[in-house]
Every structure is written in structure tokens, then in C-alpha cells.
Length: 606
Image 1: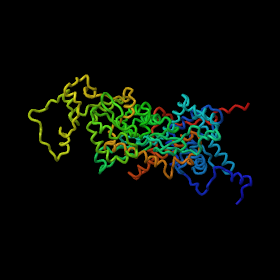
Image 2: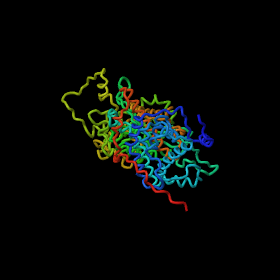
Image 3: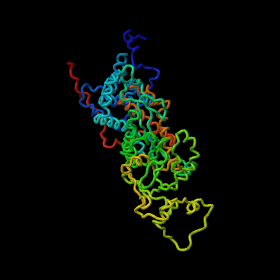
Image 4: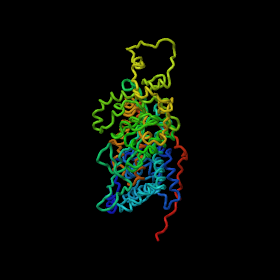
């Protein structure tokens, strides 16, 4: 065996990335073709080609090749690193797959050739991030804080937000490609449209800003992410993830009835600075999902979203057709406002004469005391339920609902002398009223007038009853309308939700959806593919991190979908499944590679 020349040995020792010859198993063309189909049907390669058209410099490695290498790296190693992509593209692909991606037929034979091939791949990723970055800067060193602030401020300007929205759209096109596959093949037909939205931490390798040296972090747009009220922050980004979820809607659902089966896919992704645009990012992914014309159900969110300005989260989510299931901080529980005479109590509008002890049952307790006394509060919460207004008409296209007095309708839940005076009930049949109660029948007991609480009116109303016009609208009108924006009443728009807080119905809706969020986080941050491990996505910068996270989530969606299908049918995703993926809305152009002679050389240095 002939030894390498000394110079080549030295180059091989310093080569990055390094090869591990014993791990270089070939990847079948079928799997490469399937992942390429997902990538091409997302429309991402073609859009990047269009953006790079005419830019200075030679084209280099195609965006499609770079992204395909990263997808293969995530699928086979769990890491979205250029080094793993380089090993796979040059040493593990068969001849047909090499031809599809424009990879030379023979792998590099010398250390210098390996270095050159890997650097070309790095430059290919750099060209992608350059064209998408609204504030390009040197990410190889720490900038002075003043200089970094100038670059980071560009992200908040009009042009910067437009570029950030374009980046989020491209990332979601890739994440939603497996979702479009599942929708096209009918795998999502049992999903009712319930979604859970949550922000999870995405740590980075870079260190935070340094007050000692006056330099900024290499990640100029990163920040501190605090999870679950923890005092220990994580430096990096926040990823907003949307998950397909379901609620337990019936009393028997918790016993023998099983939920309908569907793959619990990630339905959207945004990556942004922590605590910035929290509500807007959730609305962004919901709007991208709306393009697929999937059903809309309940959107459950934690306290971080309840605290958003209603114009940034609650109002647009309602106008997209979703109902809301929310949780509240300690200072926000109890009486929260009023609307047309009705009192807003823990997100639900109630009769204005509900007993104060019931209205304020959850008020004035910190979270620790609240959780410790939750079992004691359940009976008080149950006593509230008859006083809440009843839904008369579901939300229209603008998110407006119609509610009526709890004493109105054929099945009143309270007995109200005021309502009887204003709108006396005419008997439907002649003869004396029914006085026999079937005590063994729960519905018969509950429907009898004596089982309903009686509204206690002010003493002066018995002697001097006011007219209909002098009473609140909730008492005088047949029903009241509550628009999505509550006509500018911020507290109503912010805190109102569509199920009664802490009630059994709320438990069956909110808790399962939130658990699905945690399940998705656990799946994407598992031992094999961990989006929370910065060593699995080393390229710095918000643009690069967004692209790498999107690739990892897209591959995670494929894994969720294939696992779900195999557990239920014993089969795997076929080529026909991948070929059925439709193009993103308004982006149905097929991938057409640009000729190699395109592009201008950079001008000479002056």
C-alpha cells in the first residue's frame, strides 16, 4: 500500500470536516428521490434560484443541492450541519442521486479536494443566507455593541420586516410540505381543526453580549428565553410551533371513547427574538395554515399569549375562525370587565347579578395557592355555570358571536323575576303545571324550576321596577352581540374565551391540546433529532438558524407521519404519497435549474 505524500498527509490531518470511512454506507436512490420531491414541492429551491439570479459572482453549488444535503443529513444523522451534508453528498450517494444533485461521479480523492468540496458547500449556504438576510454583517467575530445595534435595528424597519416575513414564508412552505402530503392522501380527515400554539427555546452556541468588552453577541438578534416563569433564561431564539391537536369533547371521552386518529404534525414555524412579536408570530403561522383550507377549531395558548395585546393575537385569531381556550395570570383572574351589562368573569360573560362570592372565587390568590386550592375551587366554579350567558349564535365570518341571558330560551339555567316581568312565558298547554319530578332521572331533576338558582334583584326594583330601556342590554334585549374586537374594549377582547374557565368542558379542551404541544416539543427535542441542541445546527445568524430549524421540523414531520402510518397499516410512505404533494398556494412553478454560465463576477478591487 503506497503512502500518501507528506504534504497531503498534513492536509488530511487538518481537514475539516473529517471522514469516518467505516460509517460510509450508501443511501438508496429511492429515499433521496422522496426527500427531493418534498424539497421541490415546497417551492423553496426555485424561489432561491430566482432571488440569486443575476447576483455578482459565479453560481457555485445550487441551493437545491445545499438544502438536499442538509435534509439528508437530518434524516440520517439528526444533525443539520454542513459537514454531515458534505459527507453524504460526496461519499454516500449512488450514481443516479449524484446526477440529480450535480455531484461529481467520483468522490474527492485527496485531502485538498475534500477541503475544496466542503468549502464550496459552505459558500453555497452562505449565498442563501446572504440573499435572505435583511442586515448582513460579519458573523465570524463579535461586533462593537453600537455597530451590532445598527444591524439588529434593520430587522424592525419596514424593509427588514418584509424580508423577515419572506423568510418565515419560505420556512413554512418547507414545514408544510408533509402536511400537504397528509391532507392530499386523506390522513388528516379525522382532524377537527384544534391547534395548540407555543414558543419553545432554541439555544445557540454564541455567547451573549459582553458589558465588560462592549461587544455584542455574534447572534445579534438573539435574546433571553424564559420558560414557564423560570428565572434562568436561555440565550438564543424562540421558535413558535403550531401542532395539530384534539380535545375530549364528551363526558365519555375520558372513559371508553378513544380520540379519532390522525398524525399530530407541526403545522407552522416561526423563529424570532424571544418575547418580541409573540402574538404576531402565532398569527403568522395560522395565516399560512389558512392557505391550505383545513378546518378551524379551538386554538389553545398559555399565559404568554393571553398577555399579548388583543390586536396582535386574540382578535386576528378569532377572525381566522378559531375559538380560544386561554389561561390567566394571578392578577387577571376574577372579574375582568363588563359588556352591555354582563360581567366578564374568567373569560366568560355572566349575569350582572351573579353573587360576588362566586364571581371573585378565583381572585386574589397567587399561582402556588391557586394550584393548592384547585380542588376546593371546583365546587364554586360549578356553581358559577348557571349564571353564564348562553351561546345563541356561533361566530360569523368576522368572529362576532351572539349571547343571551341565562334565564332566556326553552332551557333556562336560572330563575330571574326581571326576565319573567319583561318577557312572560306563555304556557304551551292548558291545565296545571307538571308537579311530578322523576327523582331517578338526572335531566328531569335539573330541568325543574326549583333546581335552578334564583337571581337576587335589588330591593328597590320590587317597589319601583325600571322600564326595559333603563335596564342593561343583556337584560332588555333578546340577545347581545360580541364582536371579535369588542368594539375597542381591550379587556373584553383580551380575556374572553369560548369555554368556561376551570369547568369540566375547559379541562377537556385546554389540557389535551396543551399536552400535544409538549408532546411535539419532546418529539422535536428528542435524543435522535434535537432542535434544542446548538451543536446540531452550527451555522450562525437568524436566517441560517431559521432555515436549519425548518429543515429539521420538516424531517420531523415526515418521521411523525411515517410512524403514524406504519403503526396503523404496517406500510410506509410510498413514492405515490410523495408525488401527490401539491405545490404551495400561488407557487406552482416546477424546479428549473439555472444554467451554469449565469451570474456576474464581482467588480475588481479599487
